[in-house]
Image 1 (cartoon, rainbow, N blue to C red):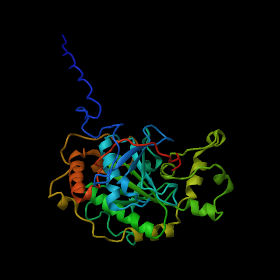
Image 2 (cartoon, rainbow, N blue to C red; image 1 turned 90 degrees about the vertical axis):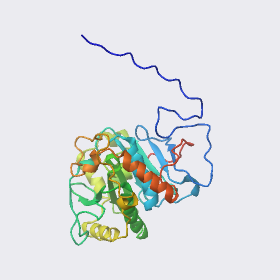
Image 3 (tube, rainbow, N blue to C red; image 1 turned 180 degrees about the vertical axis):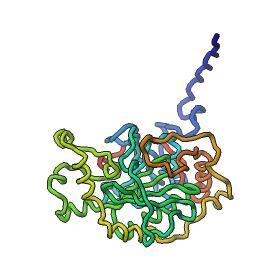
Image 4 (cartoon, helix red, strand yellow; image 1 turned 30 degrees about the horizontal axis):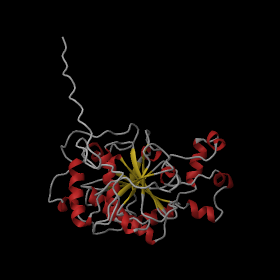
Length: 345
């Protein structure tokens, strides 16, 4: 014998403009105008030239007119956005100027891709001691070199919280900006892993150092392309694409080994990053809360246990701290006007 209860009745939709009780996060209000009420909001804009499902742009503190430069404060919202998506197939990306950010206003790209990016599958190893002397940062952040991938890059794995991760990666980005070194960022695994990818593709194209057939494809290695999701412009190039051709193209973007280690050593010089655990009043965050988050089969995140723990408490704590410090968390994830950013940006 079997028994099943009748499903509960569906509650009526809320009136226009009212928050939906079934949604614990942000809501969309087409009638709401983003205004400066003393706190510049962080907004999500629909990308009118989407690459994949759910392609949006995240614009931190949108009313301040920030340029396309990363700081620890502006890197926290994309980490929280990736965590709150609760979906391992949702990634957030960033293109610096010189690395195919064609519009100079601060924005991050994000979309769903129901596959592991090739860069996520690549193994990692410890950086040479002369580049980064400790395997883990003092806040538990693991910093590794990505191997067996066409583009040399670094992977950061979350330690004691998002705030310290945003600080460490943000400071590294600031140092690359000081050197005018173009780079891309890919946020994966619910915000628990961040790939920092310095590159020189556009510089080599300008210097005539990229083979003509590679340039002729028109594929610009912005963050998602350089992470392995290639967007071809013609059917002919798509049909003729091969593993070897894709690897050859991406290798044109990579720094040499000597340049890479020198750049990474400069970016990772010791800093005075605040302790997220101390900031959060010593709370043990992200432990024993609500089960496990999904992971992508084939993604090399086995060493990153933080990616498998629900991060609700950590997200909430980081939001409280960030808001108190000046609203660097996604205070207002509202819809906005369509973006003019191209699919290659």
